[in-house]
Length: 236
Image 1 (cartoon, rainbow, N blue to C red):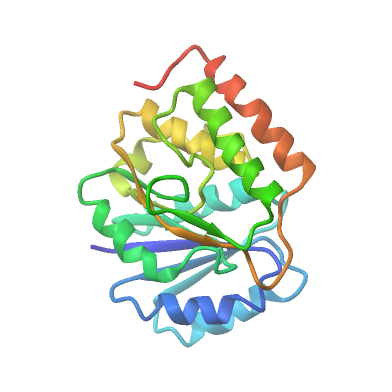
Image 2: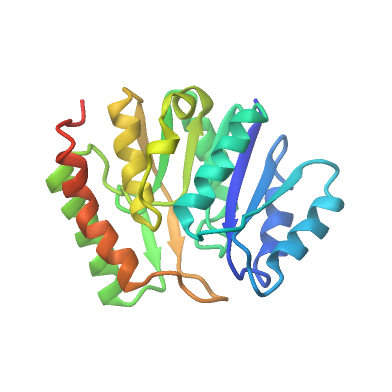
C-alpha cells in the first residue's frame, strides 16, 4: 500500500507544520501539499517541511487561476503519475482529524471511494453556529433530493480514493472549483460504477485562519446538481 494524502493550502502557514508532523507519524503515508500561491508564505514553509521529510513530502506550487477543485485535480494527476495506491483528501485547518485516516484507509479495502461523513450515525460537527450547521445539512439534503446520490455527506472534503477508480475518471472534464467539486466528484464516482461508502467522522471548525466559504462558492453548489442531472445520466 502506498497511500498519499493531498492537502490543498492557501494561507495556512499557522496550521501546516503541525498537520504535517501528525500525518508523518502514520506509517507508509506520504503527503502532497498543493499550494495555491499563498501570499502568507505557506509554500515556502511546505518546501522546508519537504526538505526535512526524507522524500515523504512533495510540494506542488500552483500558478494561474486559483481554486479548491483546480488544486485537487492537479494533485490527483500527480499522485496517479507517481504511483499512489490510495489518494486521500483532507483540509489543512484540522477540521479533519489525522487520527481518522487509518479508518478511511481500512474502509477502502471494500470500497473505491470512502467519504468521511458528518451526517451518518456516529458523525458530528463541533464549533459551528446553528445557521452554518443548518446550511450544510440542508445543502446535503438538497443534493440528494435532486441527484439521488446514495450519500449523506456529498460535500465532505475528507476522502480516500482507490487509484483504480480515480484513474477511470475524466478529471479534465470536472468543472466545479469550490466545495461543489466534492459533489461533482461523488457523482463521477457513482457514474463510473465505483463502490462508495461513508464512515463517521467528527468535524471541528478551524481554530486558526479564515474560512474559504463565500457567496460564489454557495451559488456554484446550488446550481451544480441541476447541471449534473441535466447531463441526462442518473446514479446507478
